[in-house]
Image 1: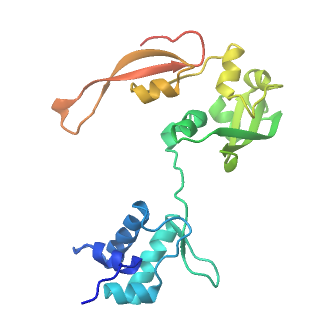
Image 2: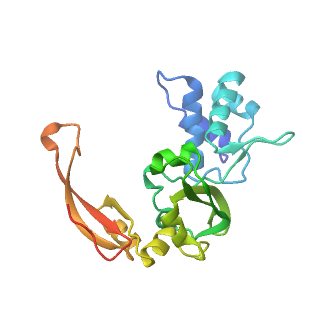
Image 3: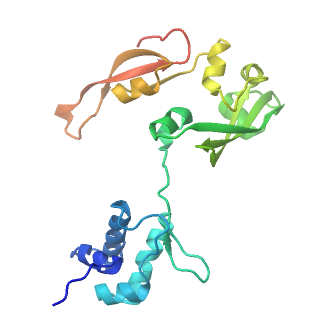
Length: 242
């Protein structure tokens, strides 16, 4: 029996777990594992349908379902007339951390940046006035920026501010300096909370930090619930302790 190096299709077949789950989900998990482990790298072609059918013994429709699942996750792309290829893994930012794009970007090992599209004052529409508790027709500032990671555009950020707060942003270098730092320098102190860990302390090194203990359910077992250390982080000179 001659030995040979396994190709990606054979490697996927070797990882294909037996079980009660749908076959396309198990194949998708096997291919996802090859991508996560670097066996298949960005730009590499995914094994074709015929190769996967031959290696796994699954039906062509099952193979196509698995590939479609990876495509929906943004792991691979298929272009007209070309093979399906692996994409670079996206950097993901949980919605709970949207309060600090700059801190998140640095945590991900990237350099944050921005391009200002507009900073404009206009009467607030209802969608803006309601959460800001503004009267109908009151003026508000809207800031639109393209956020960058290592110089590459990754998202469009839109923020609205009451007139008195937005006035403080006029003339600021919002492409290089964070909104929080700008407001703090002008007397508006943003306060947020995060877990008390060495990483969080390092990320928010320029902030005032105060440890507080919050009662949290850290386990489904109610007997293991207890106080959890958090930090109150302020972009200003003082932090009010709870």
